[in-house]
Every structure is written in structure tokens, then in C-alpha cells.
Image 1: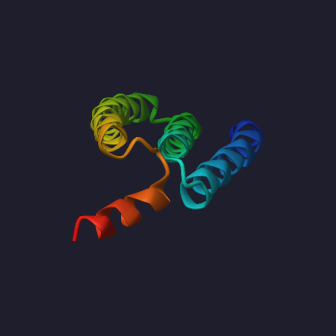
Image 2 (image 1 turned 60 degrees about the vertical axis):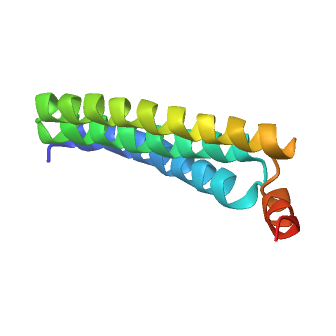
Length: 109
């Protein structure tokens, strides 16, 4: 790895770690389902940025680009399905709070 590649990699790696921590925080701490999906999006963006930077540093830009395009397509499909599920949950429970899901589920028994 050259000096120029390291100079590019370290600032981006710090930003990637910060993005990843923010995404994990949103997914684990929040009870709002929309915020959890936003946290998942932030996690995926951190992985996407990591793939782009790793491809540039390693010299395999074409491979990194193809992986990123594939990741974006999979991400869009997964988030679309997840948003559909969240909308269905909201229409049945009138709430986006994940704590209410267990209460509503226990009431149906």
C-alpha cells in the first residue's frame, strides 16, 4: 500500500467508523421503526463507502464499483419491503413504537 493510498484511507476510515457507530446506535437504541430503518440505511452507507475506498486503495476500482451497484440494488429492495412492513404495522397498531408490537400481540391471545 502506498503512502498516497494510506493518506486517503485513514480519513475515510474514521468517517466510516463514525457512520457505522451512528447506524448501530439508531438500530439498537430507538424504539421507533422508522428510525431503525434509517439506522439500517446509515449502516449500509458506511459499508458502501468502505467498499469504494477499499477498491480505490487496492487498485480494483471496477470490482468495487460492481459490488457497490449490487449492494445498492439489494439495499433498495430490502428497504422497500421493510417500509411496506412498517406501513402495515402502522395501519394495524396505529403506532410505530416497537414496544407496542408485543403488547398488541399479547392482547390477541
